[in-house]
Length: 280
Length: 271
Image (cartoon, rainbow over all chains, first blue to last red; front, side, top):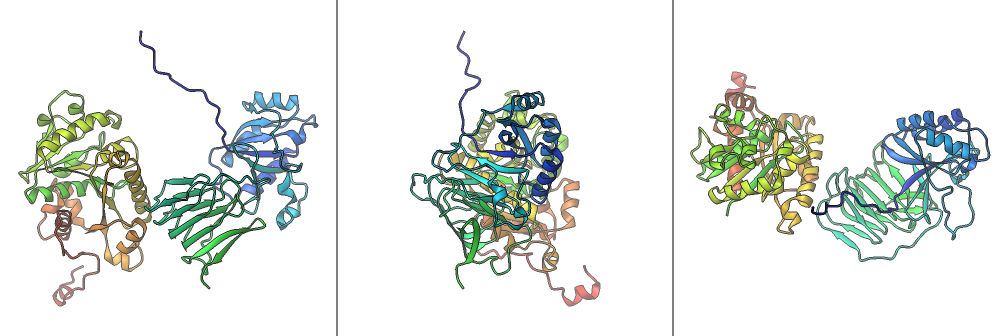
């Protein structure tokens, strides 16, 4: 008999994953704060796998109500995928609720000084956060190799990456056609120049800078691997979202009058996303 | 050299089948050997619009499965000598269409016909994909409304990235924007997007504007493509589209502005 075509391949892939660092076993507090943080961020998550890091509560002998937490997270579009760390009891309870087990701890980059995972709660630039120094949670995106990570705070901004990796730069990617809804263009380790219109629902991603010599109506994500010096130049700002090194801005209530349809540049200033008109 | 033209939109109910019927009829009226294929397997409508539903015996799926020859399945149009219809199957689903089978049929049709018009189903699933895959040109049918424009944008993206021409690295599929159900009055009132707005987003050449008209519904129900209607602006608009498609130059873009009523019309209380 002829050998059958292989029905599958087994590989190891490095995927980005959001991690919620659970700092409390108080479910009410946890849910309240999750609610507060994500209630005005509809659609940020949509069936997105999220890991729960229990390292901070590993010493507590109380286990979480994982089933309750999972359905609560699902309401926010987060799909609890598994747990990191935690006591053996907590890990056992997680497995019983159908969660997977990740290796005990997330490897922190060696470059970086030791840092507690809950940096979001230490963000003093954010009034809302500084009111609650003992935040019950912190959320972090762990990207591929864990040398760079982005933390999300309630101000719709991913906080500045813990450590930054300078990617090897490739020649600039140039797109001279319209980028249409549903299309995603990624300039890996490179700058991206787009000459055609970028329509709503389209996504530009670059590890370097992004230049758009046409209206940007979709999303532009520069410095995707954490390059905080990346900038975005837009001929006509009509965007849905812009982001640099994880700090992003959505225009829920429309783009401010003085910027809409104008040529602008976007850059990061101490984890503040600045949109500046190019012509005064 | 024969041409395969897909009539597509992404969104449903914007006038793809109406356009396929009138456009293919218009090509045939100008003496081109034309065939129009209904790719909407499972929800076939083209035969109704063309008024040949009672003559459908075999369909495209029968041909793909090799049960009948292409000749047996083709239906001659009642209005035009040069026009044939290849109906869809009503009892099968879109997965029954496969690329190899469709390519075989198209290659066979290319031997006889000048123009092969493919009426795409709505959506971006396999049926719509199969209809557009082999296209040389595309009529992108869009209503003056944001969701329709967004869906057309998506379709244009797929045409540019996934059609056979794109995959094989040939010249890209030639895209034409056709705005249908256009009501200049409502555009002026700011209730509808204008042609300029649509072009600003989609950025492809405009091949025509079909005005909103009750006669389209009547024509559909009567099984006569709208292009055959007498004294109808829809018929005129479709004839212009065919003219522009055939490379006629200098045709003014009609029906895009509100018509000033003449003295008599006002006197007689026309709409």
